[in-house]
Image (cartoon, rainbow, N blue to C red):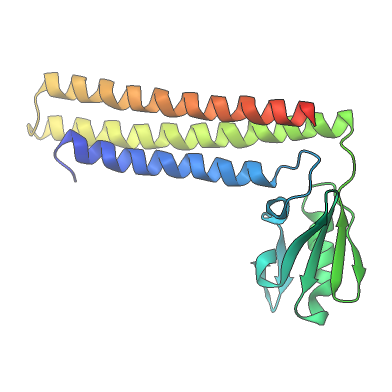
Length: 188
């Protein structure tokens, strides 16, 4: 266990950065009307007895603004790839053409925009929960140090306030990311 505030804050910052990065990846998979290879990042394909990321069964390309393609390397996985894309919850309707899977990106409807906004909120709330969990761990470390008389009560209070300020700054970053994604969903 770390016994100084900088090492505790470094660990907490690293873990909170992980929550931000996870949210960034999840948001890249939320489409906002433009074709992007990142849109298919959450897709997992049943292949060789286990579920694997789409990137392990084929190459994703963007030949047009409203079309994604997946060049499947193994012909026997084309059907599983089509099924995985269709069932991933992104509202896509892929079509196989030999070993190439074409995934047209439909225009966003008002209903679909609402669904995307709800998903963005869900992802952001999950990231906030992760950040709060990291804060809880930091507070427990600080309390344990105070209980063992390694730090004083004054230090415990001051360190706890620092951890709370760090947490507040990360929650604000997450809120800003959500606001940006909401704007993107509404304007496309």
